[in-house]
Amino acid sequence: MKADASHRKFYRIILNNKSKIIVSAKKDKYKNLIAYTSVNKFLRKNHILAPRLLGHNYLKGVIIIEDFGNTSFHKILLKKK
Image 1 (cartoon, rainbow, N blue to C red):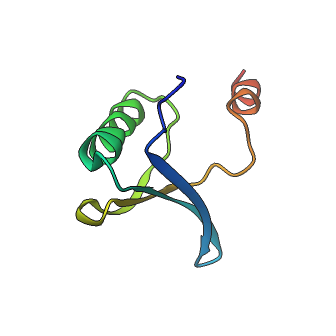
Image 2 (tube, rainbow, N blue to C red):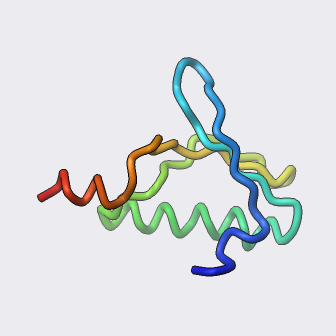
């Protein structure tokens, strides 16, 4: 999806010895964060791998999600066979 993350910025951080991703949006906070979170919840509910929501402050335009690290989706699919 060419312009999917155009208004979001992603930052990898270490908290409590675990890597997490901070996603921030200054524009279109609803579309960029709340809808993103809803899609991820739908995917997870249907057993499709997606980052878990760990925390949020929608008013400030920030969510914290699970970090899959350097593992690519392709590598995960290969392990699932």
